[in-house]
Length: 130
Image (tube, rainbow, N blue to C red):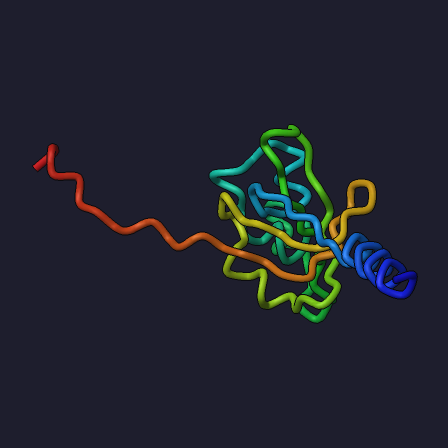
């Protein structure tokens, strides 16, 4: 009986340790989040750090990976650190809303394990103007 209780307690404790947190928000660059530019965030800010940086940025330099997840409900952003997730897996989610980042959260950093991206909105023709 003691072994069963001990094993069940260990399994319960292990499930708490392995539990991943999920945050949902707008995935963008740190520069855009700090400047509250969401719908028109320039994509070069994802590569070299800020708007129009490509004019003085040398393409032989390393890409700046300062991606953040802006969470509307909390009115703050979380820095994204890749832990088990490859950078190219986030490319489809950049400048998209309702992106879910699953991983461990420590302070204002999400150690991303997985990403869930909602499907693209369907294209439609605005027929009232025709």
